[in-house]
Length: 193
Image 1 (cartoon, rainbow, N blue to C red):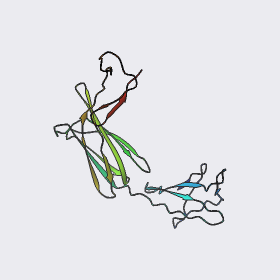
Image 2: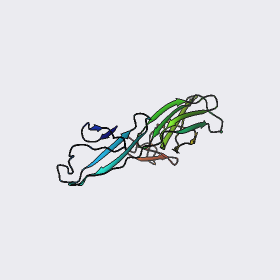
Image 3: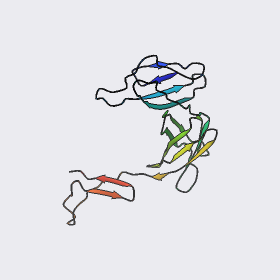
Image 4: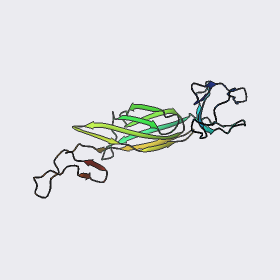
């Protein structure tokens, strides 16, 4: 099955994997610029999917190749606390950073691990969090999943917090509005009025 970003245009390939829209698609937009189309293909038998783009040139038959992504990768997520011990029952969110943008959620087991299988090849962002006492701890690495292999992502959780206070001038009384604050190397914020 092939979908083209022209309304709800959906067609099927022939026995050789080729397709033809059977209609003339506009090669230019209303401002006279060349028009590009997103082309998505899915093998309805295997579930494999792919995406490509084509910019049309008028007066010729335009060709586009769509490579179906392998869906035989796996991801092992291991969540560790600040001491390196495994964290059970950590909430894990996985988001693919490219087509088809799959998302997954799960919870680590007693070993601090969560294994996801049958993944499309590509880049993924992994986020894990757990509440320890009154503190939410979180970590978020990126990982690449290759066809036919198991990628590993180690999430090392660190404490997170909300800081509240008043930023004052040297006299220790006069509030400074809209000051830019930095906590450590990553925390940023702006004071209110």
